[in-house]
Amino acid sequence: MFGNALAYLLRKFAAPFDRHARVTRRPARVRLGMEALGDRIVPASLEWTNAGGDGLFGNVANWRDYNTWVAATTPPAHGDSLFFGSYTSADCLTLYGFVGSSLSVPDFASITLDAGYFGTVNVGSAITTGNLTIHGGTLAQDGAMADVVVGGAFEWTGGTVTNSGSPFPNSQLVVSGAGATALIAPAGGGTVDLGSNMTLSGGAVATLREGTINLINDGLTFTISANSGMAADPGQNKKVNLVASSEGQQLGSKIMIEEAGAWVEVRSGTLDNGGRAENKGGRFTLLAGTTAVFDTTTVIGAVENAYFQNGGITELYKGSTLRGERFIVFDGGSLVTVGAGTGPDAATIEILNTFGGVSGLMFKSGDIYINSRSGDHGNVEQPGVLQIVGRVHWTGGTYHPRVSTDTIPRVSDVWHATGFFGIGRESNQVRPTLAPVTLNAESLVDTPVRDHSWLVISSGNRILDDGFHLVFNENAWAIDQLGNPIREWWIRAK
Image (cartoon, rainbow, N blue to C red; front, side):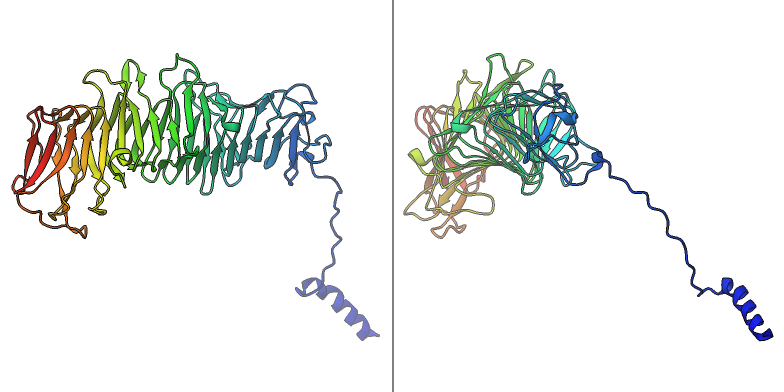
């Protein structure tokens, strides 16, 4: 009996010190409840109804479920899809974004302004959306901090995108990211109205189809950044027009190829811009038979060039035409023709609305290659013609005409101007350089036949040499000037 009592006491007092002893605890109480509706996790598809009557974006009473038509139980939230359709054309005030949004986690999965919507959706802060579709109505960016950034697909066939910035638009519509696309295709080749700047970045690609982009604000800029591009592809004999909505606009629109890796192509028909273009290091290409038209603009009394390049490359395929009002200027980079022939197959730069001697193609620096390019001589048996309709002022840079070293056929590239062709440097500038590339029938560099000559520059008016001579290898070449007045320059091998 004594032993049983001792065993009992040992078990009672030893158990609390045994780290392996089982401890039984009462489970904690759990309070039952519901998740707050404002914190819902599953994105919704919502349709604008304005049933609440106040036009406020954040009022849950103004929305219904897009699929069931049942009144919404929560206002728009992060990741939702928004639809503005024919149910009501009431304006929506004011759409805003959410904390923590980005291109990878956008404020909205999609925003759609359908063709049956005629109201205005006001954007009051910067927002991101996966997709943006505008078939009607107005998307209005209010103020300077209301950028709309699209990371997926932007499709625009009707309606208006505008900005209330003053005096000039200061918010942007941005399409950004690898795989992001923009399609601007006015329904039936009609008209869409643009009052905001547009930017392509991060690998985005935009396509412009037949129709008119009506510029309702002055000074709009289309900016194309690295690895992004814009293709004008309206179809053969059709146009993409960017036109000012009023005669009072002086700045029009500017297409800005911002840097290396950025590109603009005209793939069919005509791109007729309501302003100028500038290439700062990317690529501007006119494919065969296409046309691009640019206008000069006036900024504080100074005339801006219709087309200006200070880096990158301009490519003109056969039968294409780069047309500009008064001034087309190259001050860096390369001007290249591709497959250009003679007559209608020539690559052409045309100067419109000339005024005395202060207009024309001004080539100040850079390189000119006809049917070739740096490191690629092309086929010497396919000489090309770079035709300038108007005047040429060649004041710097290097012209690289190809000439055949064989006696038969004796062919060469030709730079031709229908107006006068002025040659000579501007003050404090490097003189223009003529650097012939002599090639045999296999298009390999070879020695030219002595005393043979090749036509490389011609004019329908006259060639003017102002006394500042060209830079060229005078030990290998001589220049023969023919005509009275002089209209042809031939290079002769010594």
